[in-house]
Length: 187
Image 1 (cartoon, helix red, strand yellow):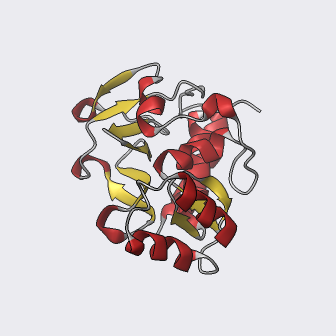
Image 2 (tube, helix red, strand yellow):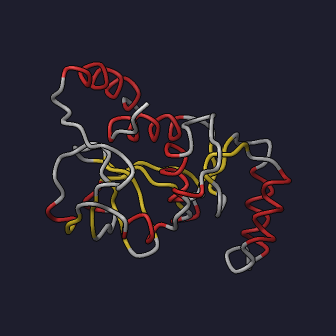
C-alpha cells in the first residue's frame, strides 16, 4: 500500500478521535505503565518534574494509545492506527522530519493540500488542507492530540513529508475521503 497525504490525514483523524495521550518518545503504542516507565528512564530531561511523571503514569488505564508530536506522523509511517511496528527509516525528531520535507514554505503561504506537515522549531503537526491542524502536544497542559486553527497556532512553516506521495484531492479515489472527513470532523 502506498503512503499518501490522504492516508496520513485519515490516520491522523483516527488517532485524534480515539483515546490517546501525550507520552514523549512514543508513536501510537498501547499506553501501559511499562511503556511510561521506559520513556521516563529514556528521556529524563523531558520527565524532569514530578508533575510530568505523575501525568504520564496517571494516564495509564484512562487512555489507550501514546504519541508525541512527531509520533502522530510516525504512527502512519509505522503501519497506521492500532498496527504500529517500529521502523528506523522513519524514526526522526520533529525537526528531522521537517528537514527531510521535499517542498517547504512559510505558513502564511500554505497551499490547500491535505496532509501537509506544519512545523515550528521542535514541534510538528498535520494540516487538513483547509483550516485546521492536528497535533499531539503538552501545550496548555492538555497532553493530548488537539485540533486547532492552523493560522492562529504559531506554526512557522509547512512542508511535504518526504515519505509519502501527495495526490491531488480532486482525484476520483478521494471523493469518498471527503464524505469520511466531513463525518469524523463534525463535532
